[in-house]
Image 1 (tube, rainbow, N blue to C red):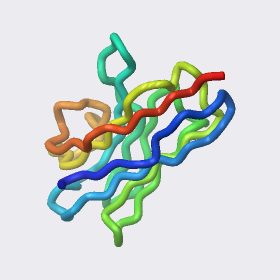
Image 2 (image 1 turned 90 degrees about the vertical axis):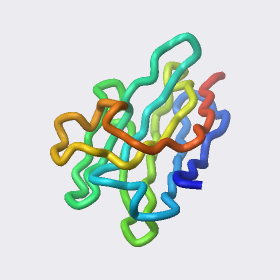
Image 3 (image 1 turned 60 degrees about the horizontal axis):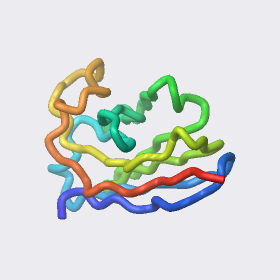
Image 4 (image 1 turned 30 degrees about the vertical axis):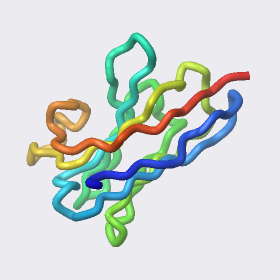
Length: 126
């Protein structure tokens, strides 16, 4: 397994969840790792990313201020802390690694990632 994601579940609006993604080898990380999500009937969209050497986070406007991405370089892992969850956050969340570009302006572009985790379902509903 290259990227293993976990931590999804069913919660109520306002609750929190933490997603985790672990790379089996450093090779599968690249310059950055990211989280994307796909809701039923919608395209996959960028959620958050983090530069692996800089630790700098990047967020979609829809989650900024509510989600926090962090990395554990020693464990080759990236976490996504999701607070104040809303029903519109309901989706399958995918972690991505192997970011190809040497700069971060394209960190939100799915095609820049070589490796993808299997996806974990997050459902926010009352």
